[in-house]
Length: 491
Image (cartoon, rainbow, N blue to C red; front, top):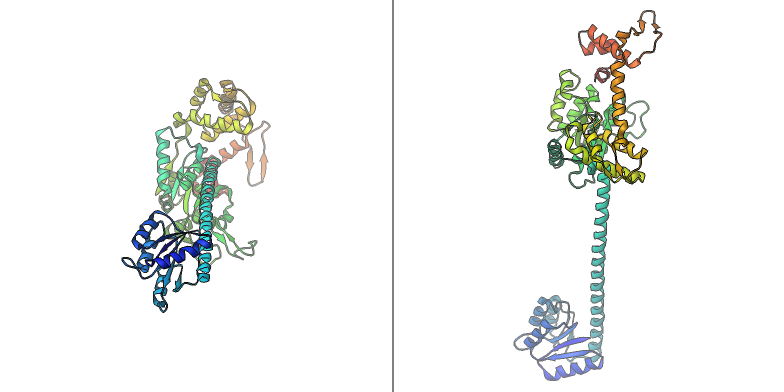
């Protein structure tokens, strides 16, 4: 081990040098402490032995300078003190000295303390190497995890549909811009309106995730898929014994499961009217109670409502609460139908084609200009969902390198058949095929010719509306259905 010895006494300096050389070390000697300090700043010595009392720079001052120097701050410093100078030794240890030796120096004590220093320095270097290796490994692992995380985020965006958002049209660009702004305002409730298939849930997920990724929960609830009697417990949860058949330990509702993430209420127009004030209270107070519960629960999630019905018209009809509607529309997004996004059709079709080719192992690599023209002229009543289904069907049935017009002939054929069927089918009233219903005798007289049950239902509803001068509440009561069911039939 390289050892630096500093002592203004030549005899002491020589004696130390001889002993350390015999022990197999490599001593360098300095009688001038200033020169020794300058040398230590340029060359690293694992161990430095210095006397306390020296001219120009005493041992304690030299110790302070060495510990302040980048080159020697990790060096072990042993102080040589005279007998009875214990206060100086203690001060040296407090200031960072590794150990001290009393004069006259005992060779065995010197050998022992130097050996301990040697082991200490080896441990320091091993720890330094381990730390450096660990830092390198952590850096590599972090980089690898970051890459995996980005891949997972990309996959999640694709699975959720966010990666499929095309925004060539100005209106869609405005929707995406506003959705990104709303992402940073979790306390703002949002209403997303648009026709069926326009991608309302995809935009809701964009609001939730923003332009990166959000690891908070996204809980979706389809309001039209839940029986009215179960809606409150599904949304708010319930405590044990809240109603017959409830779970013994109770159950968390969607408000609770959303945590600090997002609760997406799809088809919000179907929410029972008597529960709408409770949802409004949640939005205003940011708290709620489970069904049958006494403990208030905090609500920290974002609420996004969505639907394909005209909520403003429903408000005027008394089918949706005005105050809840205005609260939801603090953040309002209206999605344009695909027929108003002509610029996006070609790019979306190409994206769906690439996705289906990978899934089904086909050879399609491009779309013919004539096919793009056909797709652009179509009205797309089913919007983006119908476009994706069309591409999937074409890839499923055919295989080629280019998607050609013949591969999507079914699109216009099916559409024409539907239009023709509607135009050529006489109404029940015109054909005289309306069944005769005698309510008092509970007798139904059916016609000999086939008829459409759906058309019959519509005819009965419109006849009832006419009977009550368009009053929907009386009509619904007369027909024994809810206003929501009536509204669905009329939409």
